[in-house]
Amino acid sequence: MAKTLEKVDVVTVGVGWTGGIIAAECAKAGLTVVGLERGHERGTEDFNIVHDEYRYAMRYELMQDLSKETITFRNKRNQRALPMRQMGSFLLGENLGGAGTHWNGQTWRFLPYDFQIKTMTDEKYGADKLPPEYTIQDWGITYDELEPYFDKFEKTAGISGENANPFAGERSSDYPTPPMKKTPLLQKFETATSNLGYTPFMMPSANLSETYENPDGQQINACQYCGFCERFGCEYGAKSSPEVTVVPAARETGNYNITFNANVVEVLKDGDRVTGVRYIDTLTFEEFIQPAEVVVLTSYVMNNAKLLMVSGIGEMYNPETGRGSLGKNYAYQILPGASGFFEEQMNTFMGAGALGMSIDDFNGDAFDHSGLDFIHGASFSMTQTGQRPIASNPVPPDTPSWGAEFKKASIHSYTRTLNVTGQGASMPHRDNYMALDDTYKDIYGVPLLQLTYNFTDQDRALHSYLTERAVEIMKEMGAKTVVGREPVSDYDIVPYQTTHNTGGTIMGADPETSVVNNYLQHWDAENLFVVGAGNFAHNGGYNPTGTVGALAYRCAEGIIKYSENGGSLV
Image (cartoon, rainbow, N blue to C red):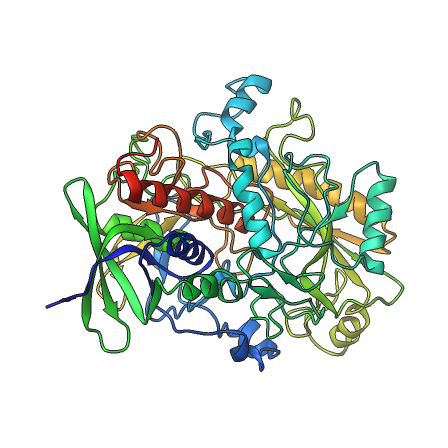
């Protein structure tokens, strides 16, 4: 029998960026908060041996244990879904900080176009720009409404950047710290894109250019440009992450506690309210019930959706009828780009996760799509993230894949290869969605989440057009040999692409077509909130974390309002 614990004001499921933000804001407002984290505690002191590429970047030391819980995957509905038994296309985080510990730190605001994509596309190009099987919709909130929360997240994280992107939404203030160093490699990209008539700018970065104290009094240190950001924790405390910002701010209030090794398996519901959650201790397998006035799902995209599904909260999406919203509008990203092989040697081995320059001339609706068979686009970037030698082995085309000639080409190319990479937006499609698997279960006896996903004609057209633009940039940079990305065919879950999964618990203004309102409050249970990239109605041309952070601050404000007055917030 499950042991019932003392009731609290707020319980969060997961302690990453969203769980940390909710905890800090609610605890500062005087609410008692418990964070349930299925992993263990960790901090900067645990990352002193983090510069081990094999252990962390190849064997995923900081990631979820897929032998305990994973997902199943298929490209089409008529296929059998099989478990993802090794990390591949995306990396699922675990332990304190979640994916916010091992992220690169590239921190963007989605464009004003993103939040009103259906309205703006229809007004400019007509309602038939995309076929009806593409289920694009507005988010139920505008960029201007969300801007104060973007500003708050960036000041909490101390984001380093410059207000030089002509296509970005209006800002209420500058970035809190200056941009990172403009290295010779970035200057090469800057010159080339400027020559082509584009507007390059330094990428907004959570690897800080200087030491910074945020409004909560937490110090974030200056980046050392060691090149070990993505898939690694930062021992310097120079990469903004939950365990150096919002988690300590929450703990200092005295109103916040974290329970580790607590895997939540059910949200408990009574009528039109939730009463708490049931979790299993991952070490002893004891069951506990944590009662709470407010429950907030702050885990990863897929786990948030799964918990609602197994708890029977909300209407499951049906791809045949189009009814239901839970699991709907899963979207990923498209990666157009080009590689260039140069004659001269360059310093490619140092860097930082968000050390880069970008252009937005082909993102959102910054260019005319009238004669094109796709909408949206991609941000293009040249990043200097640190070419770690195991994962970075570029060789020119037609090089043998092994042997003496391969080794010679690999050694020669290591410091002579650059990449221009696009983060391409992904539009939702009727046949791309999440559901519960009816065969496979996790170690706790709960059904696995089932992902049905494939690239679409929209994806293929976007990738083809924008890869041509990347090739043009790389040629202007002076590469001896330029190789564009291979055309998109079927989605393959094996090779790493991005961890930028979105959708499944989408937000909106209509309970018929969304899971939560614009405060991330569930339409079917007023004291249940669900926050994360699962709220995105489509995926954009950027990393999601900046927008997730803004939504978390919006959600926290809603929880505090609800705690005072109750009822629906919209």
